[in-house]
Length: 285
Ligand SMILES: CN1CCN(C(=O)c2ccc(Nc3nc(-c4cccc(NC(=O)c5ccc(C(C)(C)C)cc5)c4)cn4ccnc34)cc2)CC1
Image (cartoon, rainbow, N blue to C red):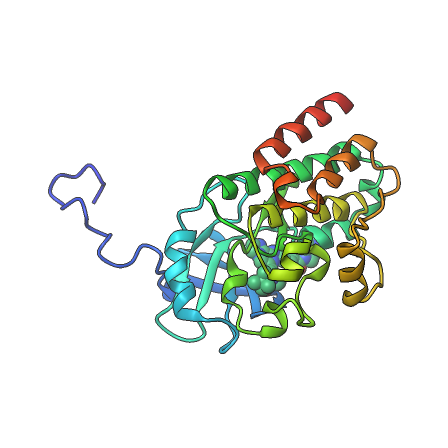
């Protein structure tokens, strides 16, 4: 019945949990890759909507806590956030269903298109601005990403770039990933207060965003090259920062450096950063 049909009670259709997706409405297609949690596949929802389906390997995440959080995540909606459509939580493994991004991770995209991107500072800056817009939305909603990096952003059609997996890090059970001493902890994207006290905040997301800008302007190089995590921790605590990428505008590098202020409060907000990046983009083009 159409929503304006008076004969049907207004709450019809809301009886089941809105964030719960019926697996029978999903058609699973090719594998897109596998990550921390297991296999990710492309799919079709209700026959026509392109989706990505994360099939959560048992024992990799605290599922009940995540399912609870999914209700909040589905409400976070922005053109630069990969939209969570819902979860299939009635059987195992649980599925996380999101909008589909056809060009894969930003990191792989940068590496694959280095030749055409390296001379296109305008496009690189635009990618950074898109990520900043998504992060400014999360900041406004007091939502911390906790693992912002080019590998956790995705590229869709027309060079759209979106932030993915925001907040998901809280539900990972592998303490090699969750503890700052673990082998899988993203040390190279972490500020001093996270290295020392695992104190996450929107200001620690800002530090990670500065490293993501460095990844973008180097077309996907590994920050600090082959340095071991312990050596990076030592350098960051001594106040050493990443060098200016080759042919990266000075104004852009100056903004990166502000994201790496040792004191969290001295780092800009995503709201301020967005304005600064847009004015640099206008000044350069
Ligand atoms: C021409 N090229 C051919 C090759 N190619 C692809 O194969 C390709 C195409 C599209 C892809 N799209 C997506 N790929 C993924 C995907 C694929 C593999 C692994 C993952 N990531 C994960 O599984 C994962 C990410 C983060 C985390 C924590 C919690 C640690 C932060 C844990 C797990 C995501 C998710 N998506 C959500 C929306 N769209 C996508 C991924 C890959 C890209 C295009």
